[in-house]
Length: 474
Image (cartoon, rainbow, N blue to C red; front, side, top):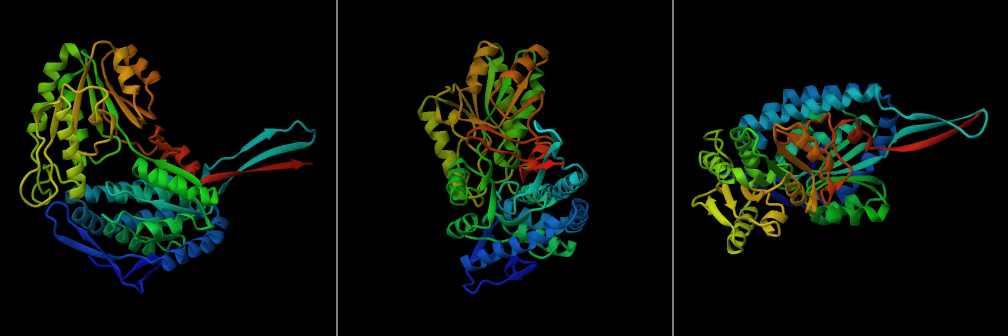
C-alpha cells in the first residue's frame, strides 16, 4: 500500500519532501507499503485545521456529533475488510483477527456516540441565598492522539471516539510500524462526512510529533505506549500545561490458588501470554502459583505452550504470530538469557528460530525470583516467568511489589480469597477466574507507572472534558 499523503483537513496531502516510511510484514519481512512522513510545516497546519474546525464542531449539539459518529461506525464496517487486510499485512495478525479489530473499533465508536445524551454536569447548592452553582462539562480543544502498534485500529478509535463526542478535534499519529490501517480509517472518516479538520491522521518522526504535542493549540495529549514514551509526553505537556492521559507499561500478575480449576487457569494464562505474540499491555506477565501445586501447574503450562505452533498466520490462523520487529525479538531473547544466567530454569522455548519473520517461541521459565529483571520489567512477548508462594498474603505482597499496576488476575473458587485479592491488589483492574479483556464500558486505568487517566467507559469519556463552574445569582 502507498498513500497519496497524510490526511489533513479531509484531504490526502503530499509532503513536498516526499520522505517515505517503509512498512514491513513482520511475518515474512517483505515490504507491504510505503507512507509519506509529514514534515513539521504540514503537521502544524494539521493542528491549525483541527483548532479551526473544533470551534464549529463543539457548537453542534452532542446528538448531532453522535449522528456523525454513527455514520463513521457504519463506514468502518463497510471498510472492515480493507482495514483488516492492511492491518494483517503490517502487523502479522491473521486476517480474521485484523478484520475483527475493525469491527470492534466500530463498536466502540457507537458506544461513545451513545453518550450524547448522558454527558452530565452537576448542580450544587450555594452558600449564598438566591444563587445556584452549575458545573458544566466542556471540550478541551485539540487532542493529540499517539497510537501504538499492537492494536492500532481499535486504539485509534478508542481515543478519538470519546474525544469527538465531547466536542474535541484530533490530530492522530499512528505507529510507524502500522500506519497503513490508519489511512484506511482516514478513508472511512472522509466517506462518513465528518466535517473537515475534525480528524487528521499523519505519520511523522519524533521531532515532528514533539512539534505537534507542544503546539500552543493542543490542549491534551493521549498516549498508549511505554513508560519512556510517557515520560516524553509529560515533558511535552509542560510546554502548554496540556492535559495528559497515559496508558503505559503493564506486568499483570496471575495468582493461582490450590482450589482453582488448574486446567482452565493454565489454558487461559497461555492464551493471554501468546495472543498477539504477547504484545498486549494487560497480558499475563508473571505467574504466582501455590507451592503445593507448583509442579503440576508448571507441567500444564508447559504442555499448553509446547502445543502452540508459531508461524505466519496468513498460512494458518491457529499459529502464534510474530513480534513487531527484530529489535523487539532481540531484546526479549536477551532478557531470557539474562534470567537463565541469574538462575532461572528454562522449561521450553528460549531460542531465536531460523528463517524469515520476527518469531519467538512460547517460553517458560521456572525458579524465578521476585528481584529478577524478567519479573520486574515488562517483557511484551511470549515469555512466562513462574514463582511460587506459601500463603495468599505472600502472593499479594509479591504481586504488589512492583512498579506497574495495570491489570491483575486471581484464580480461586474461594470468594473470601477472591475478595481479599480484589480489595488489596495494587492495580487498576482485577479479573477473577479469567484473564484481562478491557471491556470498553469499564475503565481501563493503571496505577503507579502504568499511567495517568484512562480509557473507556464514562470515566474515559469524561477525561476528554474540562469543567466550567457557573455561579448564577438570581
